[in-house]
Amino acid sequence: AASSHTHAFQAEVKQLLHLVAHSLYSNRDIFLRELVSNASDACDKLRYLAIDDAALWEGQSDLRIRLDFDPQARTITVSDNGIGLSMQDAIDHLGTIAKSGTREFMQQIGDARKADANLIGQFGVGFYSGFIVADRITVESRRAGLPVEQGVRWSSDGTGEFSVEHIRREARGTDVILHLREDADEQQFGDLLTAWKLKSIINRYSDHISLPIEMRKREWDKDKAAEVVREDWEQVNKAAALWARPRGELTSEQYIDFYKQIAHDAEAPLAWTHNRVEGRSEYTQLLYIPAKAPFDLWNREQMAGVKLYVKRVFILDDATSLLPTYLRFVRGVVDSSDLPLNVSRELLQESRDIRAIREGCTKRVLSLLEDLAGSEDQAQRDKYATFWQEFGQVLKEGIGEDFANRERLAKLLRFASTAAESDAQTTSLADYVARMKPEQTAIYYITADTPRAARSSPQLEVFKRKGVEVLLLTDRVDEWMLGSLREFEGKLLQSVARGAASLDALQDEAEKKQAEEAAQTHQALLARMKTALDGMAQDVRISARLVESPACLVVAEGDVSGHLARLLRQAGQ
Ligand code: ADP
Ligand code: MG
Image 1 (cartoon, rainbow, N blue to C red):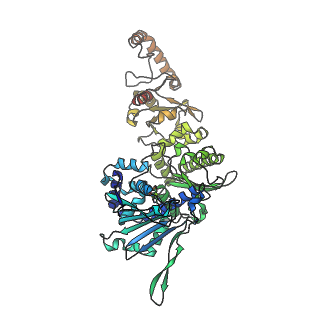
Image 2 (image 1 turned 45 degrees about the vertical axis):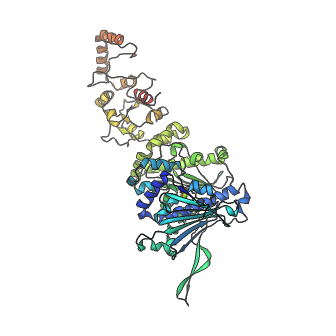
Image 3 (image 1 turned 45 degrees about the horizontal axis):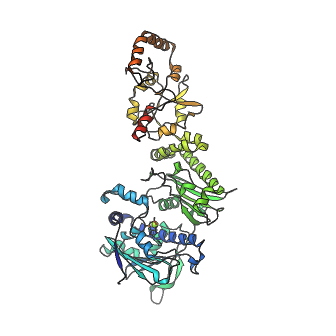
């Protein structure tokens, strides 16, 4: 048509399309999950916007998703009567990657050939996954509220570009039409053009979708001895939100599939907790701990992952109000019975119900972690070790952020220690305390850039000689955490690089005497060194902490530690 325009895909989309077409064949069925989830999102969006603008319903408020196929034309069509797309929406959303996370991901992998399917699973491949099975996708749509002439047809073969044109379209919402690849072996996608196969994919991936998913009725016609397809539709999914069903009815497999779907993760989660909370504030929570850190874990702004529903209606995907920042790795769903449907982001921050939910969710996640860490079952404890390796550094942020739960969090901390050969972070503060010498009053630690640097510090010499354990703190967040973690079960946390006071308790009489005598003998030398180092060192002392090294630097009580000073310098402060 004369009004058809061709546009080039954004560079990242081209990369993504290449990736999708070349590395996802083994997961090809996920295309349907992605398209159904978009259809469901579009319906949720309409329902949400129509709260303020009922005209958007255009007199029809039964939301549903339809799935149809045509074996002759080799097409599969996913339709919804949700919010729909304007021409500009189609250009913006189907030609670029809107999500900043996806863009970051694309930059990170850089060379598309290096990406593996697991990584791809971490973020939704979304709409473009249609090109796993299709060599052309046509989208026909009209945005709710726009006149019928303002429909749009978007079309692309998934290589360099797409075209858009205006069409007349009565129906609100979107049809996504996949033209299945012909180039490939007929067997490869032929099975997708059968009702049973499409139903089985829906049952596997999209059963929790709370809208009806419909397919045409099919019947066996005895006279024709063939299947006939009727004009009317029947529902093929259960349309029961998974989290709203009782725990006893659900299998682990269903929980895991649901997780993979909402978290866009190819791997099963480590653990989950599913509860209905009753009382002053009523809600259901289904929260998961992933087995692997996402690529954007360090982005503290990146808080999507826990979806908020109100009475099964999706409200938003933004965990900022539902969980503290240090639990940003948690994925799942919270469904409130109390909040109003038209709750806004701003209102959320102030809502008392939300505060109760936030506290409740935090407690649940902490108990889940405690259960893993303290389990009788080795397999569960191994899961905690995996969790710590992936997310321990983030959990440490909680020590400074969540005063109310600080003690619980402190028990969950794990450190590398001089008591172990390996540098793995496996020692808890409780383990340390249990191993303390009777005369020992403090929990000793050293901070450094690497476990190796920590272990070879001259400051450890005396502790080694005395057989006193020292925790090796080498994560960037540690100094910050230590600012809020002063003690554990009444024992002070004490840096080995700080003043000598608490070491005295570990010295026997002979050693103390020896040190005093040495100080006497070398008084003149000390005075000369003090003068020579004037302005650089506060004091020069005879020390009992060294065994092999001739000298070491220590920090006065209350001063910024050497390691922190280095970190601050690196950060340009
Ligand atoms: P995501 O769903 O994570 O945003 P997708 O690649 O799946 O990413 O979809 C990209 C965007 O395209 C969506 O955010 C939405 O704006 C638009 N879109 C896709 N499918 C539909 C649909 N059926 N109806 C309306 N908009 C859609
Ligand atoms: Mg999507």
